[in-house]
Length: 163
Image 1: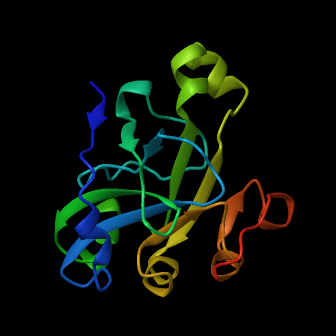
Image 2: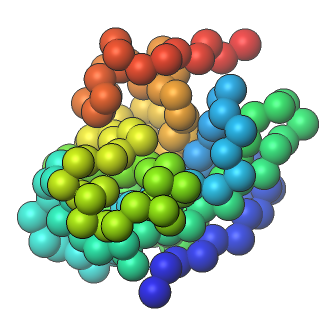
């Protein structure tokens, strides 16, 4: 079953990831109202990989809302805890977060999405990466994200500069 997320705009004002692990998603110059995201569950201690080794049912349906800043925002709330506990439970030093175009996933057989690696963006986050960007994830990636491992690579995706 797909995870359905309710957008709570006020949660985006989190001061970081210290006590409440939440991931803010920000889509610039993009008219999407919804995307699918994949982040491993808290208790997923399987080997982390950049392959799509999860099912369509494991995706989060992230609803986006246009903010006063003309940016589409969404949030995945992971609950109480810390990044240390999260990475410890994942038993990994780097974890891939995937973003998929909702229309592609809804209209393409999942086997084709996997075989053709139809990923809008993949970020390979270390704990230090997420701390540095304060758990705020941008698409397209911002200058602050250029040193994070990602696919497509930072140099090949369109850029957005924060005002």
